[in-house]
Length: 485
Image (tube, rainbow, N blue to C red; front, side, top):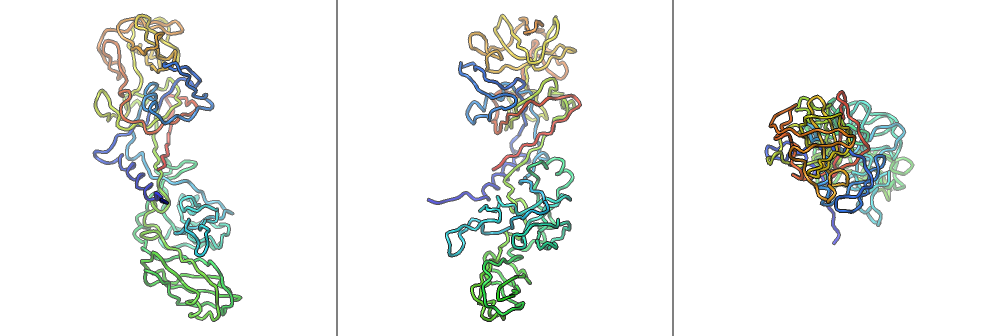
């Protein structure tokens, strides 16, 4: 059975996702960073080879049950995403002189009357939201293209922001939609995407079913030259009128003189043009372009295809104002989106969460080195150093399920425990304390501290492998994720 899921369903899904960040009883989302160790081909704890690519060319993560567990193995930290970190987004399309833009049409993809050919845009696409029918200007204004002057190149950048249709001297007709605010430019403007929002002034001025553009489909022949006026736009709306110019017997221009209201379909026939004075005109066909529901500018998110949601999160050094949970001692290669994780068995709510485990050591000889293997001979526990805090004698580490990173000689993942010496591959040794204390915002029980985010809790919604990103205390990483629905 032929069927489609419409773009409105995609927008509905994006709206539901976006609302999850602001609802009083909504979901809690965290951006996780992890993977301090290099990507490689390694043997996993279950004996199978795990090909992860390399640091310069990491592989795309698989979408399977492992994806719900592996990100926790090497998680370094997580930061909560708030409603102010989220925006609807659309692909960024900069206005560039000399470019022929597509126009807004209501009927892309429909069969052209009397043919088996689908209506396509100038660029060849048959879907409105695949078409290049809107632009972002240098003033960070967004305009919709209503008419491109017979598929001509745009050479005059629109600049004004009225609620009416703008016509520039190159024959283009534009509808101003909104302007990116300074905050939107800083947080939700990337090379490929930009925020989309509805301008309330433009929305209030929109007229449902108003006709702004009529295109010439077939020019016809034999008509009486002149401009023929007061021609009704017929359909299910009211009040629409246009004038038609005939030159050399052909229809050469159509101008909407009264936009009318309430049209969801409309026509202007050859016979109407003849009746208006273009005697003997035959074969002329016009396409009346129907606006979106509510009129142009009523809902920019729906009109421009806002089925993308952009998440923008910044990691500022160690996030010292948030307990310093985000290490700068190591790099990271993995980004994840975690929904509703737990912290000590309860719903997580803190701004940041430390993802590593930690040991408070005494009697340390020399220093532990970042990324080196650590072992505990008595227990058989194996881990990897994420950070060594020599001031407070705190060893932060991870235990993954890969050989030499968290699995002992018997193939088991054993936790570090007790007062057994912890040895680094480079020779450093230290003994876990037996005290219960809080040091540098980390709470220790008998010398040990679990990660602040419960492993394997919540749902991993997104995973991205990247080339290594090196951190520093005076550095801020701005991470933008774009989710398409």
